[in-house]
Amino acid sequence: MNLRELTSLTGIAERQIRYLIAEGFVDPPRGGRAHADYGEDHVAAIRRYAVLRDAGLPPAAIRLLLTNGGSVPFPVAPGIALLIDPALVGQRRDVTALAARLGQVLENVFQETTDAPNDARSHADPPS
Image 1 (tube, rainbow, N blue to C red):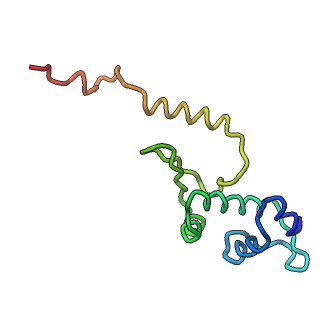
Image 2 (tube, rainbow, N blue to C red; image 1 turned 135 degrees about the vertical axis):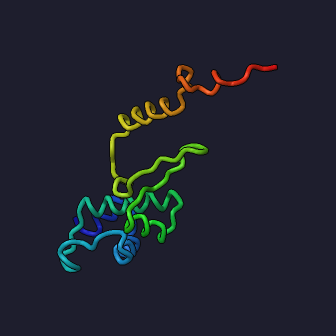
Image 3 (cartoon, one colour; image 1 turned 90 degrees about the vertical axis):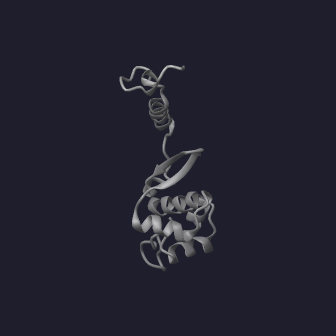
């Protein structure tokens, strides 16, 4: 796709796309300037940048994440953050199965463990 098609698909202005390429957030197009060709990898990189930026990360932090690896923390609730690989950010995915799995994990984490042999309540001194 050409630059106009890319801007139409992503909703990002040409000037912003050129900035993202110049700063290394998006790979240069294939074919050089005269025959620039953009693909789904460019769309994914632009979406990834937009999601991270909307999450409040400044460009310098986004650059560090993308170059050094690591995970992007997305606060879910007080004391809970979802860590996501930056390569996955901005990709279109069916989140139904992920949400179900996250629900299971959270239920296990916050489940009351009344049957545990080392349960602190069973070893507490009786009130005097």
